[in-house]
Length: 240
Image: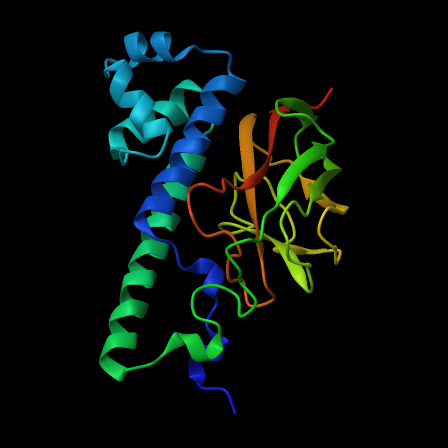
């Protein structure tokens, strides 16, 4: 029988560095979707260009004030603020989990640890194609299909993998999606296609959904920052 840790929703546990990367990427996508160069954003916001660059690359955590400026300036409503709050909560949950593991002497390796049981350092994934290019204009609350072509560019076969949403799929103001979609099994060198139906938010402006390849329990196959998430970025417009 598995211990109580087998029921943990691992996809909700986030490291601080991962949280900085996700929110920074989201900020960069919003700015670029609005067609604003980083230098102009620095002038308009009053923040140093180097600071904005470090924030967008995930090297520095943004302040609440800067997050609100991006939301207001690039038409995101409060979606960035909401995402920052959720990421902060996920980081706290991860810290609490680690402390409980230490206190109870739980060995996560029995359940695959924080990575899947079949995780291997020679495992690789490469995005080679997709539909719905970044910045595609979509009407409010319109449903559409997005496909990603992903190549198994490593030396290990893929079995029972999922493309899992990072963050809550149904948060108001966010691009909606299923929580996950099955990744077809693939041998090394083989390319597979993952298709997902998404729905634009009601708010006008840029929005992004992030996904990573996980096992069924939501544990990341590529947990490091060297493997950025697969994502979909659209720009929601008013219905005709």
